[in-house]
Length: 201
Image 1 (cartoon, rainbow, N blue to C red):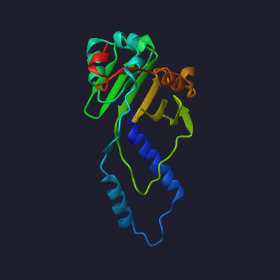
Image 2: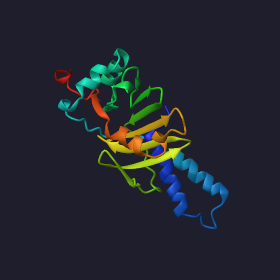
Image 3: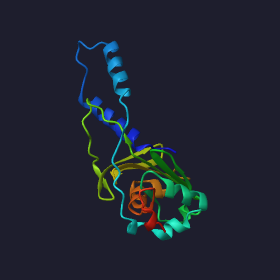
């Protein structure tokens, strides 16, 4: 899995902070190393998850998932979003762990992965950054690295990072951020442990 939303945000935050600040002349390399070590030691915290209403579950997409992926989606500790395109739901891999869940699927033309986590790190020396883009009506970061487009945003109190990679790097579909935006907009909710037992499909 290629993206971890908290890592993406932290890296972007650190990069922007580095561009805006310079070390004072009195600061030695040892001081700088100590500061970096202290930042790396910041413990992750659990965010408060806001579960969407059970009525918003896309039952058609949930039913399209293979048995293993279906079970993983239902046991996820975070709200699970998946692509609505049926070709991406025929043989996806969904992994649900204690604090995060990941989705991965591949077709002949592209690979799509989505990481969802309720872990976050807050660095006192780095102010929160607001993404310059908008995804699903939320502030977001959209970046491209070696032909892979990534959109990251916060929704339901959870950090989501969507990666899209075309099988052919020169593919027009990956020439801009249009495809990652489209796939992000079309993500649908298929559940998790926050869905009440009586409301499960």
